Length: 271
Image (cartoon, rainbow, N blue to C red; front, top):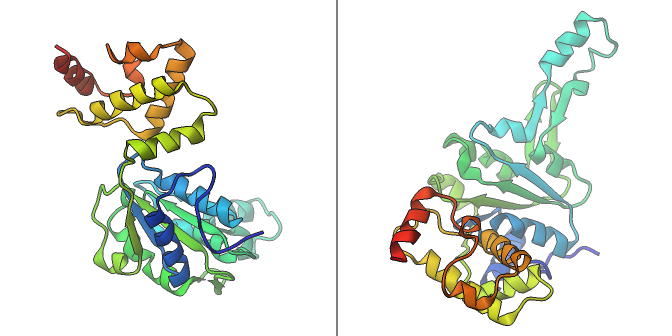
């Protein structure tokens, strides 16, 4: 049974502030813009909201080459030309060659969906502005078929950004904004409980201590994220690492640090 109030989920640890912001965005029918460093659960939030509200999730992954038009529809003129050359039936039916994009799918859905526009700052600077009309009006026009696609149910729109680029002010004015802080040690422990049924308590505490010391180490370029901590713990469990070993050195450090420069920084700090 679906609802429109988000109160977290068993698979996602959300702060009270984040849950309140999600619900405000839903109530105001505005896109929710989520920023935060990698590993803070921005993308997973959309799945958690969809699961908790009992709604379908549609994901639009943004790349550097993505255009706003891609999310609305694509007119496959090449396929139509190919069909006409080979005498295939139905080439006069232009609608056959129009395929809705992710935004079009969300608008056309019979029931309200959650639409994730993931990593919007990967696209060029014009991309957010090009979406303003559609996100405001919840409709777009297809000139090839002279059809207007209107949202049957206004989707819950969640937009993520890694803050690689500044987004236009006009776009920001239309969003509800929330910055997800990197989890503190207490929150991180709760997150780990979601991923692991049973863990040695001493191993968890030693691992968390080493993890946060590593993140605070001066000169680390790519700080390890939540997903890397989870992988690291799995590696240590699989390798039979004892809690006391972590206090002497960081085993399987390549699971946490992925750059030569960061490994060298760690080595220098240990001398």
